[in-house]
Structures are given as C-alpha cells and as structure tokens.
Amino acid sequence: MYQHRAITEDLYWIGGNDRRLALFENVYPIPRGVSYNAYLLMDEKTVLLDTVDKSVSDVFLENLEHLLGERQLDYVIVNHMEPDHCAALGQVLHRYPEAVVVCTQKALDMIGQFFGAFPALRSQTVKEGDTLTTGRHTLSFVMAPMVHWPEVMVTYDAADKILFSADAFGTFGALGGNLFADEIPFESQWLEDARRYYTNIVGKYGPQVQALLKKAASLEIQMLCPLHGPIWRENIGWFLDKYMHWSSYTPEESAVMIAYGSVYGNTEAAAFLLASRLAERGVRNVLLYDVSVTHPSLLVAEAFRCSHLIFASATYNAGIFPCMETLLLELKAHSLKNRTIGLLDNGTWAATAGNQMRTVLESMQNMTILEPVIHIKSALTEAQLPELDALADAVAASL
Ligand SMILES: Cc1cc2nc3c(=O)[nH]c(=O)nc-3n(C[C@H](O)[C@H](O)[C@H](O)COP(=O)(O)O)c2cc1C
Ligand SMILES: [Fe+2]
Ligand SMILES: [Fe+2]
Image 1 (tube, rainbow, N blue to C red):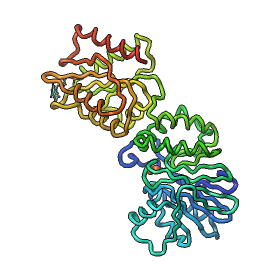
Image 2: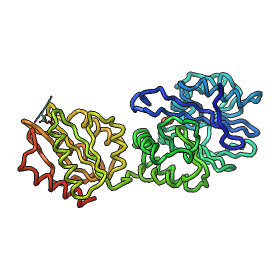
Image 3: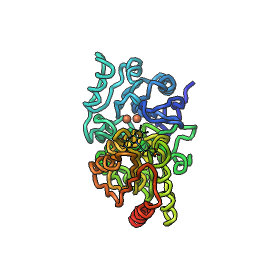
Image 4: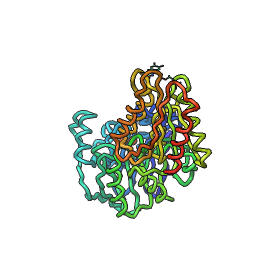
C-alpha cells in the first residue's frame, strides 16, 4: 500500500522508513531507525528528486506509481549518488525509460559505476546555476561537493522557495506520521541524533558545508527538504545555527565531557573524582563516559558539542586503551578542532598512554592541552589529590 504524503499542492514525499536496520553505513547504531526521503514534483512536467535505499524501494516504487498514474516520469534529479539514495534508481529507469536523469557529470559517472552501462539512458548534466523549468516551477542547481560525496548538488525551487538539500540538514530517526520538524519535539528528542548524524557522516567536511551555507544564505528559503528525517518549514534559522557551529568546529556549549578507558576501575575512579571536583567548583552538566560502553559515534557527537574534553586512559600493551585510541582517531578523522583538553593516564610499569594521547591531539588543530597531566601508577594516591584539584581548577578557570 502506498504511503506518499502531500507537502504542497504539487509536491509529495514518497520515501520510506527503516526501523529494522541495526547499523547505518554498517557502522552507526540507529535504534530510532532512519528515513530515506524522495520527493515527487507534479508540475507540467513530473520530476522525481532522488530515490531511496533498497530496504524501502518497494514502498517507494508503489508511491511513485500511484501518484504518477497515467502520467509519464519526465525527469529524475539525482542530487546524491550514494546507494542510500539511489539504490532504486536502476528500477526507476527500467520502469520509466523516457525519464531524463539530471545530475552532475560526476554523478553520471557513478551511475555507470554502480549500475553498469545503461544504453538507453537519457541524461542532462548540470553545473552551478543551471536551471530547469518544469511549468510553474523553475529549479536551479547549486553544487555542494563533499557534502557528503564529491558528486553532490542541491536543488532550489524558486517558485515555492524550497531547498532540496541532499544529506545536509538530515538526521537519523524514522518518521512516524509527522513529516515536519515543527510537528515533533525536535530539540528534546531529535537533536542528539541530528548531531550524531551530522558529525559522524558529514563532520569531516566542515569547510565544504560552510561553502554551501554561504550559498544558501543568498537564497530565500521557506522549506528545507533533506534526504533523511523531517522537513523544515519553521525555525530554519535555529537549525542553520547548529550547522554553523558544527561545520566551523565551534563548541555548541561551554561543557565538559570526560571519557575514560579502564580495565579494573582505577582509571575510572580517578575520572569520577575529577568529575566530582569539577561539580564542586560549580561546573554543571559534566558528562562521564566509559569508552568501552558508549558507541564512538555518540562520543564524536558529544565532542562536537562540548568545549572541554578530558581523556583518561589506562596504558594497554604499551599503547592507549583500545576503545580510547579508536575514539581519538575518530575525532581526528572527523577533523575536530578548537577544544580545551585535559589528560590523565594510568600505567602499572611503564605508562605511555598519556604521551600517546597527547601526540594524537597535538596533530589536530587548535587543541589546548591543560596542565597538569595526571599520571597514575595503578591507583590514584592521596598525595595526588592536589594535582587533581589543580587540573579541576584549570578546567573550571578556562570554561
Ligand atoms: C592487557 C593489559 C595490558 C597492559 N599494558 C600495560 C603497559 O603496557 N604498561 C603499563 O604501564 N601498564 C599496562 N597495563 C596496566 C594498566 O595500564 C593499568 O595500570 C591497570 O589496568 C589499572 O588501571 P585500571 O584499573 O583503570 O584498569 C596493562 C593492563 C592490561 C590488563
Ligand atoms: Fe550520503
Ligand atoms: Fe544519506
């Protein structure tokens, strides 16, 4: 049974939701599921904007077929050629061979790579500023390379002032009837997933997202239609502001995240004592995470949110505790910068984790490492409490 929804008089959401998938990209846990949004514009010409992942292709094809009825499909705009948005493209082109694919040259090359040669493929490659008039609507194309992949563009509808923003402004979380962000408690129940989606999926490409935001600023936007998650028609400025912070690696909040890696609990105990010392200094919302328990994607998101990051790690086979090493390498891979750092390590015979963590962090941009760095020999001693106080003072003073 079709599940399409009207957005405006001639624009429809025709995507699908997956609540069964455990790991998005086979990496990121999505306990709240994910939506794959595709849009159909029923103007004098009919225009499909992107398709969907293979997990929801059946319902998507039903939606498309039902809405088109006897009409033919004139255009398929491919904003992003990643399989979560184009797995169903092959089936669409087999069913509607007359449709003209509108995309960048890079996307066209990728169509060949993913689907093999389509001898009958009708295509029209577009560049920055090119337009397509479909009747009442004139669509213009804005290049957005590396907002998430190199072939990406976004599409702007000047008639209804809608930006089809590809992966930008998306979020994890399946849609549950409400299609619009203003119909759901986005800030309290969705923002964390939106941050985790942005930082982990697109976080590395801050400069490219900034470039897109700059171009978007010159457009009058009344609606944002992303490829995942709800559609934005109110409070767009609030969400843009989040993107400004995330893409410029500016902390969203003056806040402390403490992440620890511990085998027997001694490093954990020291991390907890440090958290308590901060609380005693009036620092609120200190967050303490065990890197072996909390998925790194959530810690990456928290690191983008918080101004201060404290890493406490046992030394493990002359290295950093494995889950902690993974976290630090993830933060580096996502180009995190501009943070204030505290360090604590533990070693029973030759502690090296502290210096090794410092080396990773110093290879990232604008990371300020606070003194003192605390070195524990198996377990924290009474004699080290002043050091812990000194680190807590340094953190509190720099917040
Ligand atoms: C498998 C394993 C490897 C370790 N490797 C080292 C090491 O190379 N150098 C060192 O000083 N301590 C090493 N340790 C000791 C820990 O760094 C740490 O002192 C001990 O686990 C106590 O801290 P915890 O209670 O937070 O786990 C190792 C511990 C384990 C379990
Ligand atoms: Fe993508
Ligand atoms: Fe995507």
